[in-house]
Length: 265
Ligand code: KIV
Figure 1 (cartoon, protein in one colour):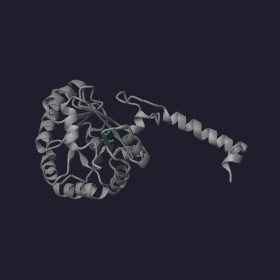
Figure 2 (tube, protein in one colour; figure 1 turned 90 degrees about the horizontal axis):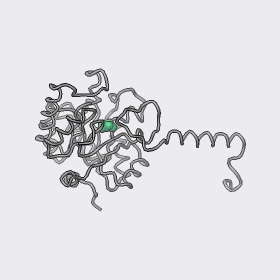
Figure 3 (cartoon, helix red, strand yellow; figure 1 turned 120 degrees about the vertical axis):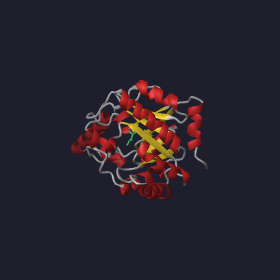
Figure 4 (tube, protein in one colour; figure 1 turned 90 degrees about the vertical axis):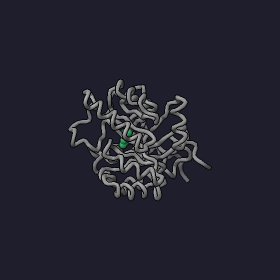
């Protein structure tokens, strides 16, 4: 059965003004749940290094780790378009990008790849698109450049940076990306960029004028308290519920209440 959400379908949603929902997944159960609900695109983000692996940046994620998680997420989904996020230093030359992105499509079954960066990537993007690998761009706060910027703060606050971002967005579109993630930039700038492009923009901390929105699934589910930036809306408090269930299990093991007769053979 063909997938419901393909690259042309994502453009169709943008053209008819329907907002696009995107969430992250790294594992089978989460990916399956998101897919069943109808999330249009599932991103196997390199945020997995932080959210799944407990690192303080995304920089240590390896290609092999991304391959592993992408395989699982692709296997779990039937309709969503699955995007593999290329880890740091796996696409910095065109040659590397062709080899690694191709590997992710061929062996992990992703339908597109995401690359962080602007104009410097255009030649690579052109080649990838040419050989049939759809690419999604990523501008604004690009976490793989954390050492260059020194913080995860708001990006493109001044006119020069805003101008550069607008030019990068147009260059990425020209090179052939099918969408661009805009992370943590002023809402007014995201609106201007969105209005200047034919392809969809997917915002995260970039306000309500983007063509769609992406968030990290664990953030919206309230799985931990340490990270709660203002752009994240928490739709559940699953962390608290897990702790409640786990402590009840612990107590019932201690008291001998679990397992009871019905739970035994
Ligand atoms: O790695 C990731 O999950 C991302 C999204 C937050 C856009 O890049």
